[in-house]
Image (cartoon, rainbow over all chains, first blue to last red; front, side):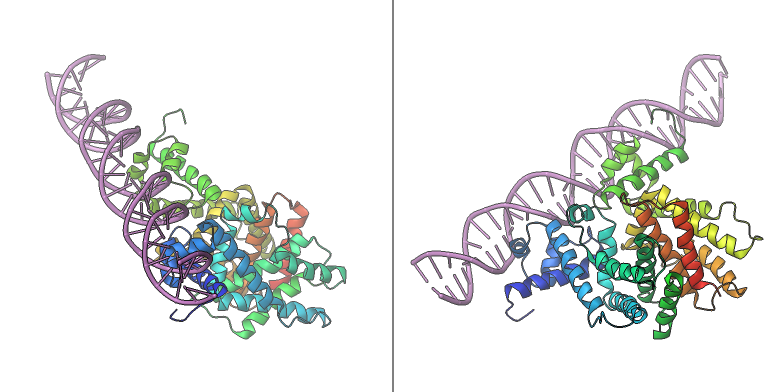
Length: 192
Length: 192
DNA sequence: AGATGTTAATTGAACGTTCATTCGGCCGCA
DNA sequence: TGCGGCCGAATGAACGTTCAATTAACATCT
């Protein structure tokens, strides 16, 4: 942090520090003062960019959600064969979480915290809906069983999260083959 | 709370209050004073039963884990057909979480918090291992694909959690049929 | 049974610390 | 010289924890 940063870069630095610290120490374990120190700014500066700690966390959620959405659907070719797109999307998501376990950890904390209420009162368009659209497409076009989107989506995301969590454990590393086995399981389960 | 309670009952009352409040307001959102008030005791009393707030939370985790384990394997008949036992276990677990969403919420918070480190440094025998044993049995006896237990377990628990989370949402209620569809998906995916 | 002593349980006010937030001033750039 | 971003010590509230005092529980003795 020894170079001049633009306003946007400084905001991003604060985001990244918050992400790291919260994933390590939890919401209540990371004071603003530590975030500031880690990001190389003064505590007061954070209040120049964010109205409160809560707003920082909610905005960090939006920021992370956007990044992960971009990564998951990067290079997504809507004209390719559905099964391939399914496998790619599933694996992209798992790999993102494995590469950035802080994001996974932060999301898990966020989703099971009172903060969600602040987000999901007015914001119905969320990351899961992007996935849901893709899954709905598969149902509509007859690649996937005719079951409620909630069921299909639960099967998809549930396995992603569970796989990624184990993939970040120090005791077990998934190989590329393991991932393909795993996505094979879920595909076998929901394909028509 | 207007009757005389034994020591064990009072401890349980504290557990239940903590569970409820933490699932509603999060770890940092529930002061000891509130737990005490909700449980009908003085703040000091909590420190008679638990050395610290951290110890209370860690013990609450053990307490809840035991209860859920009992509920899941209640009436479990080890001599029955494997597929039936699989379906029953999966559905039992989902139903427990749906009936006691505070437990699900607390577990999710706990697992993605620094508290886990206090538990899983020395304690390798955990709730998931009881499930894992059952799944390993299925692999050994040829009912389930010959894949790593981490993969199979991730598929099992991932779908349980994801299903239960949606089952507790106000926007969607799973029917008995939905649950059977869901466990059908995961069984189709991992069966040999 | 009743009195007495002993231990355990309970209380809630008080303490000390931590933390989110504020604010008066400083620095670099126009 | 003025201004806006930035700083970090100061503030005040909230919280975990302690503890001296009080009460209940129970065993022991007369």
